[in-house]
Length: 170
Image 1 (spheres, rainbow, N blue to C red):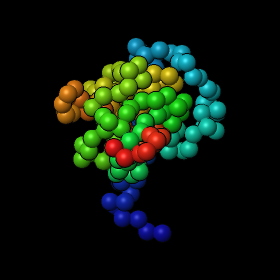
Image 2 (cartoon, helix red, strand yellow; image 1 turned 90 degrees about the horizontal axis):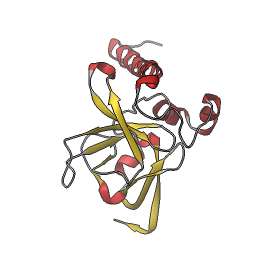
Image 3 (cartoon, rainbow, N blue to C red; image 1 turned 45 degrees about the vertical axis):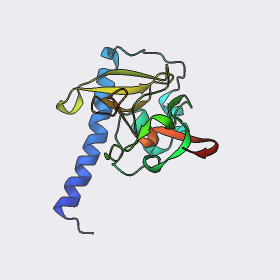
């Protein structure tokens, strides 16, 4: 099999991102300011059994899915987005908007659904968003969103599930 330089470096970059974020997350765990024990706790082996490979990489290793790769980016029905790891309700479809980034975006989480902490990986300072119940990595929040909050919760679709509301269209 032949591999172009572009393909090689794309694959190498993706592998580095997933591996690098996993190492960073492990190193930062003690200094995070987030709880070290969550309401929902499983061993690493149990998380691996409960989650798909993509969900595990995002939720437990702080990986990032490719933009436009999650079906939840195009989900427009009325309903609730929840953590794929513990089923904690996170966002209402009423706060979802199309940010054009390729990731599901929201201007506000549900009350007491998420935690944030400073993420200094990849030579940037960002606010990481975690599930309050299990500590799963969901994505990041930025201050370039729409009114009324001005925030953009840029979430990984693989970190969430969607349950449509009865009746379904928003």
